Length: 259
Image 1 (spheres, rainbow, N blue to C red):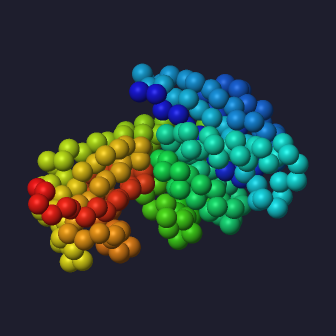
Image 2 (tube, one colour):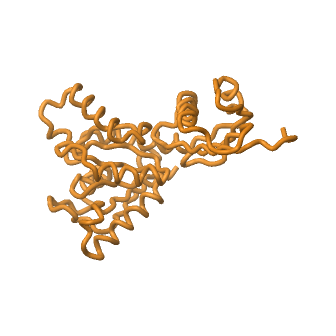
Image 3 (cartoon, helix red, strand yellow):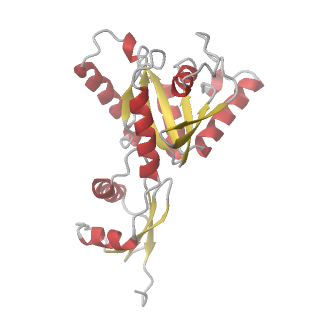
């Protein structure tokens, strides 16, 4: 297994510090000055028999704030690395809270079909880091990133090295879940237990992984209603998992006379 992992986020949220924590060495330049990383930095490590290719991307800024060509190019390269990754680590700064640009960056990962882990960095700097504060912060994440309801959240301190072991475990889990392939036989048994009112579903097949994508054969053409598609995706997650990865569903009308 070789998992490519992109570390993304706003400038100065600790991406380079996290890269150093994951590799165990000072591989990337760390500075309190936002925007120090201009190019993607790749490092490969092997941990418990698993190869991780880690990419520290340049901080993504609002378009209006990308004045020079180097800055604009870094944004383009960061988005390219998101598309090429298997798993994306979306970094948030616990001391600054969630801002609008965080949601924009999260959308890049979601739209690219990448597995996503939300990393709340600098959690050790929050006074009274109890369970209630974590629950409140995660509730805010779920409220503002509704489209990332499938992404696990991990609280960590890249600088102190807290939460790094859990992060490695999550990266492997999300990679494995995004790579899961369900047989047509299993999916047919799954379909038999669905309660669908909008239309009749004959069968479902999975045609690709990373992200898992399914073709749903029904008695009507056109996509499912949003609420029905969400129901189907939720049932797929409930039955098969798919932690940390988006699920794609495409509807196809079954041709008459074909089984």
